[in-house]
Amino acid sequence: MAEWEKNVRKAVPYIPGEQPKESGIIKLNTNENPYPPSPAVKEALEELSHRDLRLYPDPDASELVKAIADEYELKPEEVFVGVGSDDVLSVAFQTFFNSQEPILFPEITYSFYDVWADIYKIPYEAIPLNKDLTIDPEDYTLDNGGIVIANPNAPTGIYLERNAIESILKANPGSVVIIDEAYIDFGGQSCLPLIKKYDNLLVVQTFSKSRSMAGMRIGFAMGNASLIKFMNDVKFSVNSYTMNRAAIAAGTAAAKDTAYYKSTCAKIIRTRERVKNALIRLGFEFPDSRTNFLFVKHKTMEAKTIFEELKKRGIYVRYWDKPIIKDYLRITVGTSSDMQKLLDALAEIIG
Image (tube, rainbow, N blue to C red; front, side, top):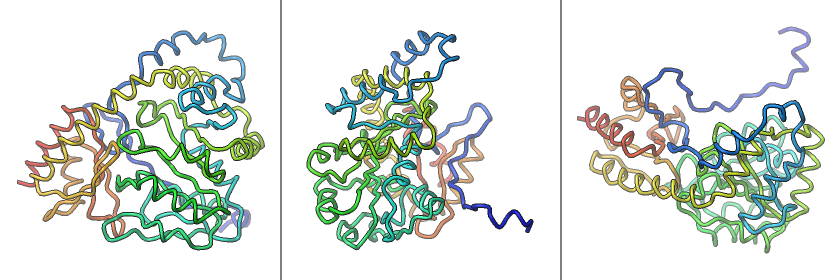
């Protein structure tokens, strides 16, 4: 080891799903929305003058913040925006998790949480799920320095009822509780109304899933004004200009077109429910999903075998070679046509 390496901060990074370069594949591995964003987004980008790009963007992203606040009936000071919900969550970890007590999150969940905890030197405890892959709120009554729960959870897709989330909040008045609602628009009730009641609640959402804008990287958090101010103080201590002009313009347009994203979510939900029934007939089982993906395992065939056979046919799904979940595949809900091709391929593979 070189002498200088002793001062290097080393980390085991988060590994995202594959982004294959070849054309003609069916990509069901990263939970992207199969439909384009609102037509208003295209119009907003076309109106953006290339001359504007010589200027720094508004560091407060005021236009986007106001559009989100209006959509969710909040004050602008109750909204924080960032470069995707990953950026928002990263800032939240840096801002709120500074206790000597460990933060708590599920053992099986979004795998960026432990990465951030490691890189920011935050102690943590990963809480095992129940045998049916559900979260038990009673497990989150331990002494802690904060709590993070993805709801619906990923990769399981299981939704925790709002009253269960509230029980966690009631039990932890001294900790910030972050509810990561990346998939909430596909079938659950947001915990957003609870921010008026609990000043330690931060609700995080994204434009990547329901609003079809993964390529724009827009995420946001909602909470009481004190939480948001603390996050902005940390953000402005690191980088004042995190949101670029195109993202602000496109995000503002998308936030104002509620009807459009709700209609695409409804399409995905209809396809998801149809595919559930077809997968059952093929011998799969899975927890009930309230997301735009399904977390499935076959009764007789190994997940890795199915994953590799699908890949040979140009169909990408997500597989983790990890204990507890190595028998499962996560399948994004694509268009009706893509899902039918998936089902046809599965029928051929399984026989």
